[in-house]
Amino acid sequence: MSDALEKQIVSTEAAPAAIGPYSQAVKAGGMIFVSGQIPLDPATGQLVEGGIEPQTRRVMENLQAVLAAAGSSFGSVVRSTIYLIDLGEFAKVNEIYGSFFPREPPARATVQVAALPRGARVEIDVVAIA
Image (cartoon, rainbow, N blue to C red; front, side, top):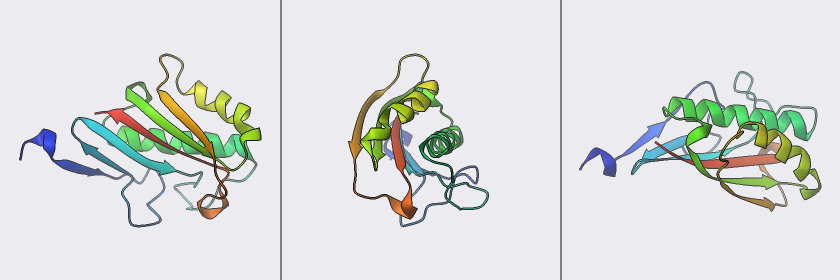
């Protein structure tokens, strides 16, 4: 099987360990598929407190760490999905999210959900070019 068709599991201690049967990210076919990140502090495994702003910042930092472990960055992200408990917090999330994509932001969907793991207010996943 050629390298382009193989999958590689990506893992880093700089982001929270998976809390279920999934990988932090998988590289396959020249792409990186990063699992949804919630605002867990990788050092403590605890949910970040203080509301939507610090939670969103932590989620983006977790994503950044996983992308770096895969040899990529936010500049290579082509798609993201934001999951929010309350779409009323979208403007605050959007401002922080946007600061990580100063040029050429990826395609994106944002949805409101009934609940997220560990009581998080936000979860984001991304797909990037390897």
